[in-house]
Length: 255
Image (cartoon, helix red, strand yellow):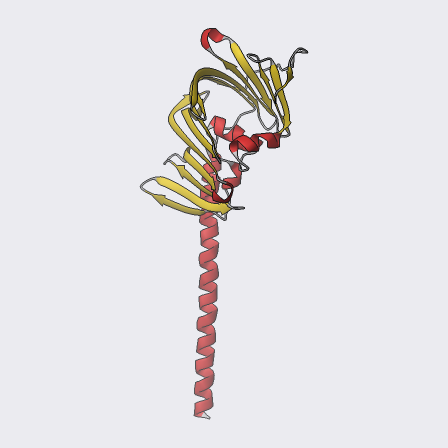
């Protein structure tokens, strides 16, 4: 009888220990999720919020080794459209683009041609990791929304927060400063030979908002390489904007 009672006590004790272990594991997992959510919310809280944006940027554009100094005039209607006018020497417009979540329109005034494509056309230039919201976020210095999720691994060391993860085959890494503003974003899809790196620097204040005045973008898609070094010299938020775009009748579709 004593032996049976002892065995029952041992079994009971083991069961309690297992229950405690399971509860401890569950509690730890819950705390980790809560910590991630807290950090995600902290990051989201400092993202640049706006209805419309306009910016003028001196820009060095390098496509496959062909470098040009241009000025970009950028206008954004949040979640709807991005308008870009590219001017060269003496302020002469050489190209204009209108990007929406579904399409891309480009006119090349130097060659009198135009491009009218679905948004997926941009993926041939900048990789499958790009969508409309990605472009909008990068032009403002915001975090790419899809990368702020509970699946990423978060680490904070010496005031720098790092988020790393894998999203449908795309390995991503985001570095944020002590103010939770994005310093660097890297996307890498090795199987498709695609990579994108964006570095933000020289943060400025504009209309009570903090954003980078210097944005360096490097995109590699197989053997095509695009480098964009963008420096904002003027920015405004929530101003009334128009987005003029028309294709002259004499222009022909680009090859």
